[in-house]
Length: 238
Image 1 (cartoon, rainbow, N blue to C red):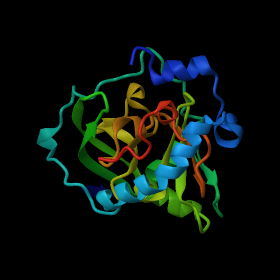
Image 2: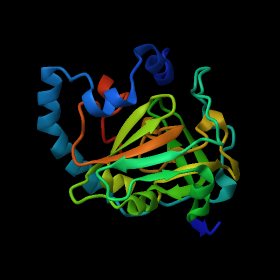
Image 3: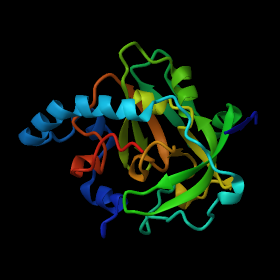
Image 4: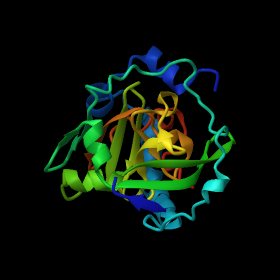
């Protein structure tokens, strides 16, 4: 790890059809069915603890040399829809249960400690790609926001209204980044520019593109993640 100063209906199209709003996701939401709620409450704490133990949350994953990068292997799955983001007005918000909420433009983010890594991106659909990502560690942003005691999760909200939630330990993993570069060049918009999650410890559906907001919370809301709310596994660790 190097550092320097400087499905036929896609998740995107389903989101557009559903008309979800960020407020609805984080504040009200549509409740899970009774069976889903009871099952989730009964099994999720145990599953999460077990998977956290297997993950060893702060242990770096071995990386690949740059010669192993597969430049054409990362599949673009926007299905014809990418959000239109004006970089001059773009802001990343870090809020929720924090003492120092943040609103950061891209230039400010790029002035923070830059980290680069060559890792394997693994998709639940069965393909993988070795990619070089560079960006800011998510843990640095969380530390700047000064989370309150008891914060255990983070929600990642995207410009296309995709949403994900992570356990805090995975967010603080040293190789969990908000990336703005891919394979040594600025991140392409189809791959999630200006900011996307990149990490070797989660399956691809956890690695949100076009991230605009990180909200830190002490409890998961009824909506936990776009695909998770349709039956996918929540922790999705590798």
